[in-house]
Image 1 (tube, rainbow, N blue to C red):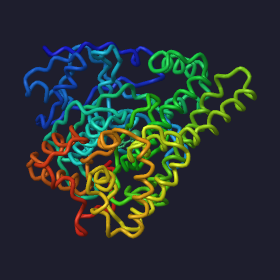
Image 2 (image 1 turned 135 degrees about the horizontal axis):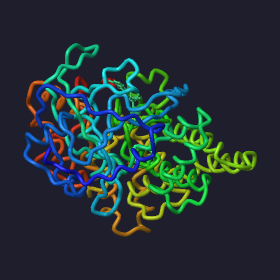
Image 3 (image 1 turned 120 degrees about the horizontal axis):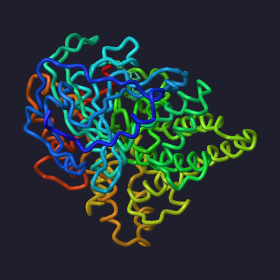
Image 4 (image 1 turned 90 degrees about the vertical axis):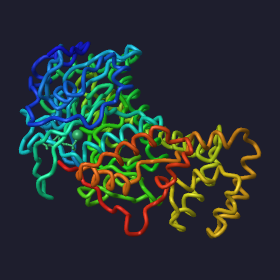
Length: 473
Ligand code: AMP
Ligand code: MG
């Protein structure tokens, strides 16, 4: 293979306990659906001809320097602990240093079975691949930390799911790392302290070099996750499967499965078909991330010499997290209302608006976007209670300048709406990738009004409302 990526594979060097050597399994007829040229340039990757890249990103050919591995991890799934998960349908090709000198993982997802596949086929079908491609790139464009999409390839092979035979695909994902809470849990559950220590050293060096101790690492991860989840709430994102194996230590959004953006704001919104009890409902995300950080803290305890005082210290850090999330929430929702430095008293102003929106069943995204428009008070005149709320808000804004600019930078005009995602997938299955390309293009500028794409700002008509999303695994 003439293509060479400038790989430097530090995770593979950790040794056999951390991963299993696993080449991607070949596919019949790889065809490139999409390739993210800007991201490739950022990763210092020189791309070859499309046919050659389809071979690489479909898993049929390895770029020079690759050392493909499947990573081991454990995790709490819906609250129950699975000591053995791991990459069951993904292989890490290797790591590169990007233009900023940051180490980034390049991983194929849907690339065939691995030693961690359990009963799975190791494959992905087109729907979830395009969904993750669009959602992760949209998230990035909104300024929210996330894994990225580098390429999507159709395989020419059928993937069998409940719905029947579906077109297979492979996603190439880029991440700051694939270290998860579940990675620490894997070694902690086995009481493999040397490996746990090695993992701690590795994580610290890769993401938090300023951390002097496991406690510092815990506090740093808590801080990033608190911000991340508050940012999700700010754009109406519901991850759907916040298992500890889907919580990245880097603080990036990872593992886009049955995730969705809410249309109407309602705190208990759930889309995921597998989330029967609403464990990962919109509003619960702020509580679940604290629970996940408690699991991370537990997995760090075996590293500590004085475990009793470590338990006290770590418990305190976890208990402090809700207040950090609340503060981040206030900052983010404050900005959505144009407030540069929101005060505690502003919470009521925000909460009251959310309740009005919930009762009136208006669109979450469009309402916040429209509030910055000069005619906002007319637009919402028919919403009961809005006029009084608007007077309070305007009075508060008297103390702010440039609030319209701030609002337009905090309230996306475009989000990946569930009904548009479903429509895009249906078209792609029929061989029409133009809705996919259009969504990608429009969502790359989410804070810019784009008159030609006004249809993509429309909430779903009653018959278009998506009520359930599926992980497609
Ligand atoms: P998820 O919740 O989608 O992140 O996946 C949970 C676990 O199931 C991970 O260990 C995945 O690698 C594994 N998994 C998901 N889908 C498949 C599949 N089609 N084949 C094999 N393993 C899978
Ligand atoms: Mg996962």
